[in-house]
Amino acid sequence: MTTRAAVDRRRLTRAAPDVGAGLLVLAAPATATWALLGLPATYLLQTLSLYLVVGGWVLARVPLALNGAGLGAANRVTLARSTLVVSLTPLVVYPSIHAAAGHWWVILVATLALVLDGVDGWLARKTGSSSAFGARFDMELDAFLILVLAALVWLAGKAGAWVILIGAMRYMFVAASWIWPALRRDLPPSFRRKTVCVVQGVVLLVCLGPIIPPWVSHAVAGAALALLTYSFSADVIWLARAEGRELAGPSEGP
Image: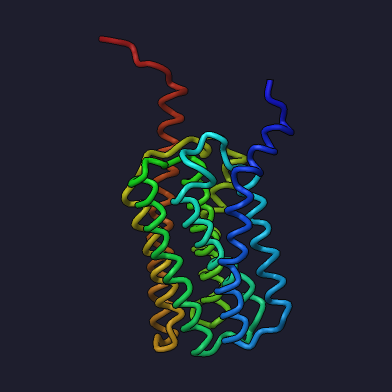
């Protein structure tokens, strides 16, 4: 019987080289952000700490049955994308970045992260290496990036505090699932859901644009929040109906 310690060692052997290589990748966006925005050295420590959290999550959850060596090409792209996300995350505590140069830099880095979001999925399909782990890793990273961008939009004065709901709604859904188990069911693939997710990221980047006046960013962010609310509501209704059908049991024949 395979012991837990043996499984952990195999996970470490599989994923540790890629997670370690990610530290080298992290050096580029973190150092550039630190230097270009004139941030204190504590920013670098914060970024490193966040990446170690991501790396720890990967090491704890990576399945042993992934195709190929290491994390695989698609998951390596997702890991590289995580270095962009963690380099942006500490900026929420630095008011000095809320100037034209800081916002343009955030837009550049976040746009690259959103573009790579399409690359890792394409690679997974191309190499036949799609997995539940890869999908979860990708989804969690997307959700966290949206939360960070929503916080930056609010802190920049481009929308009210309500804009954070755009980033927090997914976490609210997860919290609600602890109370209502029906929300833990798997949802069917949805083009609507994927499209709405992309729209949220694009809208938040538009709102951060220095050339966008606050009245426009308020209106655009409000429309995005309404669209996201509709999308989550549709999923909740589908899950509630699925639970109802299960509780009702098989219908009797004529």
